[in-house]
Length: 316
Ligand code: PMP
Image (tube, rainbow, N blue to C red):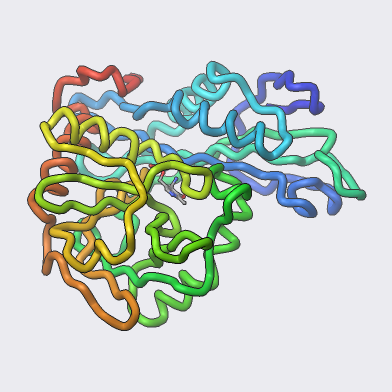
């Protein structure tokens, strides 16, 4: 889909995956005017396809576009484009229980601009890829290290929207952590350096005495759609849920820690290394609470339980 900057996106067409042409002075290349989304399509046992809350991704892209001075497709245009792309790529969706089709919508400032200003033209496109588990551990505990020097977001910055530059900001710490054998990095707030924020590509939860807590959304954390869904699932399952400031010290006596995201789904955290100390939670598998939430969410996403919340969109 193309837009001349006025906010009117004209319908695009399906085409074979391939390179796209860009001016060297495209806004996205020079000033980082780019947003993306990530969602998944699951194959049900009856062969039909399920999308999970695609209108939430559309809404998040619209909010991000407002922050980045970009026009964005309407919710309906976004969801229709996702459906069309998924249906055109049906053959790439793995069989039920064997993975999913990852869907990557991109909104880019493709118009040429030399002096710092919003690009005069925009392109919305979607590509897809079949995927399995995000972490090499599979559905097994991951190991995080708390980062004390580098930050992914600052108050007033763009950490709360899914803009491409946020991911460039995490590459250094993430790469260093992986070299040292960790799965990913857990970030702290950059003001007091004592509250949990999130992981490079997922949100974080801790469980203590069956109370499920997660850092509150306050502009420096991505409002994860899985996070929001897990909060609702946990409430439905009868857990007390708190969205609040979670101090890094709470990791020391948490019963369980887990991450949520479209790619990671619900991933149990086996250990967190914090100021040289390694705090362990589970050796393998899930803690009891994470297991319950993982099962409830994935059963819903794969069409194995009643969708009382009306979260899934079925395609055939
Ligand atoms: N935080 C960050 C920084 C992310 O990139 C993601 C993945 N989109 C998430 C959290 C989780 O968001 P969601 O559940 O919507 O995938």
